[in-house]
Length: 301
Image (cartoon, rainbow, N blue to C red; front, top):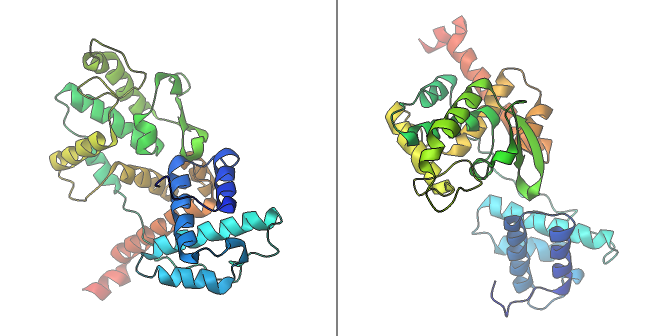
C-alpha cells in the first residue's frame, strides 16, 4: 500500500496480532490488510466499531462484481476482525454473526489417475536435468509437499536413515513427512551423481534442487519442467506441481488412509480443507460403479 494510506488504529492492532501472535504468513497478512483497507474506504470515515449488519451487507453488495470466493474471503476477514474486537471488549457483539456466509461453488481439484502418474514418473532419463526433474516429481508424489516446500528443501531437512523429511509450511508451521524407497533412490542418485555437476564455481547453495546456473530452482522453472515431461509422456491434462499434491492425497484416501492422517501429511490447519478429497473419492467411486456394474452398462447400451 502507499505510505499515505493508513489503516484505522483498530484495524492496525488486529493486523499486529495476526503478525506476532497468530504468526500468519506474509501473503495472508497482505490479503487481510487489502480487504480491511477496502472496507475502510467504503465506510468514508465512519468508525468501524460503530457499524451494523446493514453496513457490512451493503459493503459486500458493493463488491458484487468480484468473484464469490473473493466476497467470501472479505466476509471472513471482517468476521474475524469483529470477533477480535468482541474478545478484546471493544464491542458487545459481532455484527457479522447473523449474516450468512457467501456461498462458494465447490470446484474439485484436478488429480491424476494411477496410470497417468505411472506415465509421468516413467519419464525418459537422458540428461542430468532429467534426473533432477525425476527426483523432484518422485518426491512431490511421495510426500504431497507444496511446490514452495520442495524448492526450499535443504540437506538439514532430510533424514535418509529414517526416510523422513521436515518441511516448513504455511505460517512457518513445521511438519514431518515420510517418503518412500523409490523417491529416496532417485533423490540419492541425483545428489550423488548429478547435483555436483550443477554446482558452479562461486558457491554451493544450501538448497537441494538447483537450476542450470547453480542456484535454487524457481517455481516457474519447475512449472516449465513439468510441462515438458507431460509433452514427452503424452499426458494431455493441463497440470501443475500442485496436481501431484492432489493426486497424493486422493490416492491415499482411495487406498484407505485416515482423513486425519492425510490432514497431518498435507499440513492443513483444518480438517474441513482436507475433506474435499472425500468428494473426489466419491466421484471416482460413482465413475467406477457406472463403468463396472452390469446393469449400468446395459443402460448405456
